[in-house]
Length: 66
Ligand SMILES: [Ca+2]
Ligand SMILES: [Ca+2]
Image 1 (cartoon, helix red, strand yellow):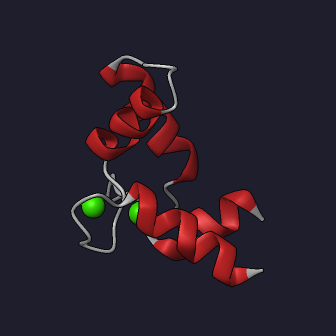
Image 2 (image 1 turned 120 degrees about the vertical axis):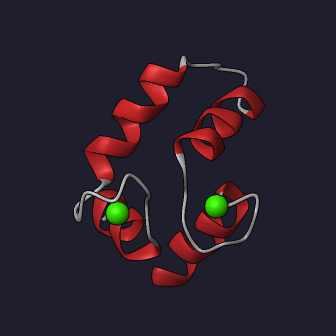
């Protein structure tokens, strides 16, 4: 369900710029009660990042989860 991805994506995208940054990723993990280091957040981003811009678009997010 693309809508589910979009909903989750919007929650993670705290500044609402349409991209998930490593900062937003680490903030999410903090909220989930599983804080991670900046390095781990960057690594998580790198695993999902297909175009190499260091940010996760909704397309990349959906492709990773799908
Ligand atoms: Ca953002
Ligand atoms: Ca990207």
